[in-house]
Image 1: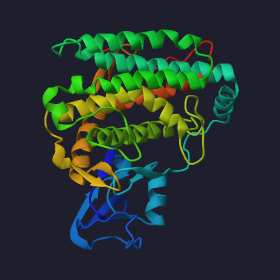
Image 2: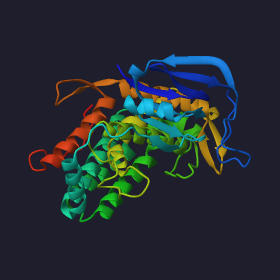
Image 3: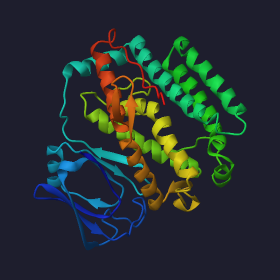
Length: 359
């Protein structure tokens, strides 16, 4: 079965016959924004080599300094393998996408028409926000019986449900995003309670801060959200959807806004639960972070730990109520894309409803 490959080793990735070969380099690395950086690899190649069959590769995630050439890019495109690139700090920087394997002019037109229609766009944006709030509430509700004093949790749940019930009356996208923002702010204020006293003392957290992340928990959230965004984009690519046309987030230059839309639904389920697990089990500790450029970032060792659990989480299967069989979390993201496709083709008969976490 195909799966994503996450590369943390420096080196040169190349085609070898009809498979892939990584010629490993040493572990020397420096930030790409360092004054002395000249755009060349930081270290030297070693004699270590790793082969992996291209038939098993769904996508590539490059977290290290990896040299590639046009022959490899052409080979990956022929195999329909997207390549996601990250900088020294773990920030998503770019993706090399093969030429679209699935094209639908009719679907593209329908996507654009839904964006241009205020009513249709608002309907989709409302469904996305509703699903996001529902899943946030499910995460909080899970912990109401696992904390000593659930009063703060039950009060927050009531507030979140009030906002969720008011969504139908929100007149525009800005009001929707404001409502979701209030819910997320309240949700993040609960994290010290959800994590427990021992974890909260090691990792103090009061509010969400980005660009740069101000502390360890903000660094974990930012890195996890980056992985979620990439995972959603990878599944969008497997459909005929245009990732640049979105409904909750404003479409803009140099970004795939539809991936941001869909990622809102899955962040509580995939990113936040992964963070809780890693911190509660002690697999991520303060030693996995470093201060740079006025912010806090995961070290390479920390990113490796996070990615290992992320990949395990994405491959984990759950019983799907609608299909009556088990599907992986990765597949759930693909199914969400298909639901949007069906909505665009027939919005009356297949009205989109965002994914609700039922377990």
